[in-house]
Image 1 (cartoon, helix red, strand yellow):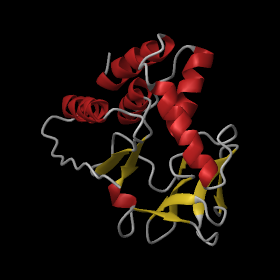
Image 2 (cartoon, rainbow, N blue to C red):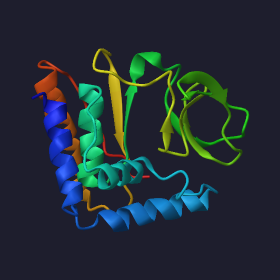
Image 3 (cartoon, one colour):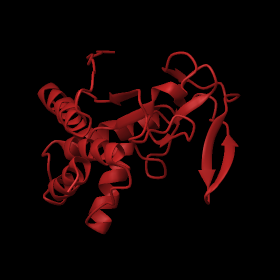
Image 4 (tube, rainbow, N blue to C red):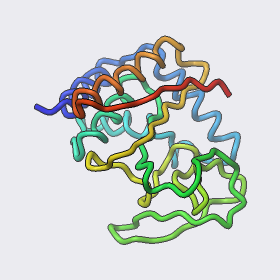
Length: 195
């Protein structure tokens, strides 16, 4: 069984077993952050909560792409939003900003490509071309979506103080260890940013 699929299966079991013990406190903190910029976390939860809810409802999650399965496993196991992006699809540097509402966001609705704009004041990840992820970490755009065939990737693990720092490091190690198993010879660098 591939690395990502194994990690995802184990992470789903951890969620079903109520792990980690601090998960709900971290999810609750994300809900408060989402409310602070006007999002409704019951309708648009942070990515970690959305994944965990799906596992609690269905008992499992499909592994559609090896790299995506791995970073979803990290998100589930550590109750942390994890984003994975195709660096080659970026125009300029990624940045976290408040939207003015004029930015474009490429997504899918009922399997069809559509372009939306975020609400003014919404927290978004963007590059020089437009939005790459809406509502901080709620929905990723199509243009920068990651797959195992991509050659350059970047990942972000977004924690709040309710997540123990040693657990954030463990989550990062789970991701890099899994990627190294999938892609021998992989080169990566890791940075902890305290903002």
